[in-house]
Length: 177
Image 1 (cartoon, rainbow, N blue to C red):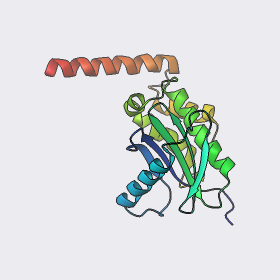
Image 2: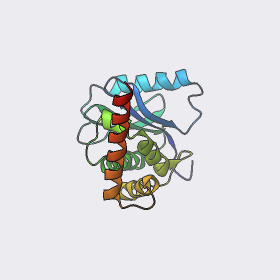
Image 3: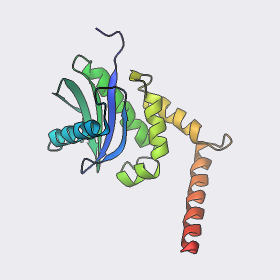
Image 4: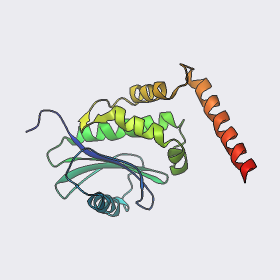
């Protein structure tokens, strides 16, 4: 029996089962095609459930999978068959809530793709090498926000800076086309 809980993977898939952000912490799926097959199986098995308000738990292929859906995104956390479901659920809830904080409540595929770097930072703050580091969404979002700030600017100014950078980039693109 293992001393600390281990996460096998964290998956963030869209409403069609395609990858948005995934992180594997185990060699249980050695190839990319094995990983994609697992993702497709998980998505197919869970897509007809109603995991919108509360996390759901399922078990298949000797893995415990805890999952939750919001709009066009499907969040999954996978552990071994002997993992504690409560710990997996707290990792899922921490990730889900931290993404909500980081994206200011607008949790949809478009917003996640526009802030993919922050989503991966969030994953890195939650789990390292399969070992759970943090499940408190406030702490996770705070660490991610501190990584993404320019010269120690407050978070409120950071969002304005990001908005101006995005507007500048779009204007430059429109002038070049």
